[in-house]
Structures are given as structure tokens and as C-alpha cells.
Amino acid sequence: MEQPNQKIDPYKIVKERTLQIIDFLKDIKVSYSMTEKDLNDLKLKLKNHLESLPNSSLNPNKENLLTHIELFEGYLRKLYQYDKFRQLIPQGVSENFIYSLAWLHDLTRFFYNGPFPLYYIDWINDSLLRKVYPEIQWESYMHDFDWIIGKKETPDDKNQITLILKAIDSLAKPGRRPSEFLSGNQYDQWLEIQISKGNLPLRYKRLLNNGCYQEIIINPQDYKNNDLNLITRGLNIIQSITDQEPDRFFVNNFSNK
Image (tube, rainbow, N blue to C red):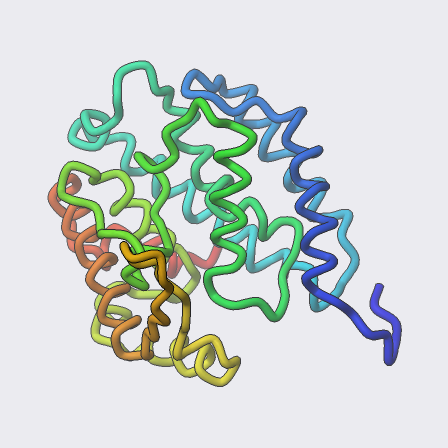
């Protein structure tokens, strides 16, 4: 629990908790051949850890995080009913591994939250998964924040699972309707919050071929355009699989459950 007037170094806490995550993952089995038991163990341990955290500005909002993750998994289960989706999954990759992606894509958010740049937590998440489970080709499944800021090229049409997960991650939230989100109304609200937090414009340094660094500035409009383009591509793939308009597919966002 935070103490009044206590000075907190969020980056020190992240360093400590990142080591905690590595230790936590030692007992978690993640593989292409994940069983239902493996998946349930992952979910139970993450939920138990989340419940153990005290209320703090450096800890996640438990209800919001779990709602997002469970919606995410629900939409993956919904997609898995379609032959066209299953055909995208390489041979030997289990159904349970696909569902585990809902829980692993935001793994670090089960351990900390806070006043960090937009990319910070995502980059740590990617690095941890690659470090602890190096045998898995995460780039074939996880969407990448670097696509939005132009640090990496966006995936081609062969990488459909990554684009599908990008769309689901962006839309698997209560009350978020794809048609309104893509029109910019809901997205602009989120964008204004990021601007007020100082997260946008976003700056990073790109290494050039001559060994020098060039500062890249991503303004809010460019960020929005790049992000919505990726989400739209993912939604188009989902629609081609399900023959449903995105608003209909994401109907669980409006469930009273």
C-alpha cells in the first residue's frame, strides 16, 4: 500500500517486478502443445496473483483487466469454431495455446501499471516472453507496438493471426463498438487521454545504416492513422472468416454479464 507523501520510483518497481514475473513463469508451462490443464493453471495462477495485489496506482485495475482478458479469450473461442480460422493455425499448435495468447499478450499488466510511455510495458512483455519461452515464434502470433510507430514494417497478408489479435485486443472492451471506434469517435477519446498524459507525441531513436541515431516523432494523428489501419485489416480478416459485420461479432462487448 502506498504511504502518503512517499516518493515512488516506478521504474525501480518495474525492475523488481520484472524479476518476479520471470520467477513466476518458471512454474507456467507454455508450449505449442498446451493442454487444457496447462491453460487452466496459467489462468488460475494469474488470477490468484492479481487478487493478492493491494490497491495502488502502480497496480492494475483488477476488474478492468480481467474483463478485457476474458472478452479476448471469448472472441478467440468464437473464432475457433470456424474452419477458416483453424486453417490459419500451423499444424501441431493446440487450441489451448491459441487461447493462452489472450492471457499472455498483457502478461506484464498483471504485475504493474503506472505512468510509463505507451510502448514501455509492451516492449517488456515481448522481451519477457522471448526470454522465457524462446522456442515459440512469438512474431507469428503477437501483434507488435513497433508497427504503429513505424519502427518495424507492418505484417503482410500472410500473418493474419497477428492482425486478428491486434483487432481483438483493441476492441475486446465493454461498450466498444467497432463501427464507432473506426469512425474515430471512441478512438479520439482515448487519444485525448494519451495526449493529456504526455504519451503523445511519441519520440524514439532509430539506428541508421551509418551508425548514427535519428529522432523519430510520431504525432497523434499519425499514430491514430497507423493504429486504425492495423485494426481495420484485422477486422476485415475476421469478417471474411465469420461472414459477420464486426459490430455483430463483437456483440459480447454489450452483454450485461
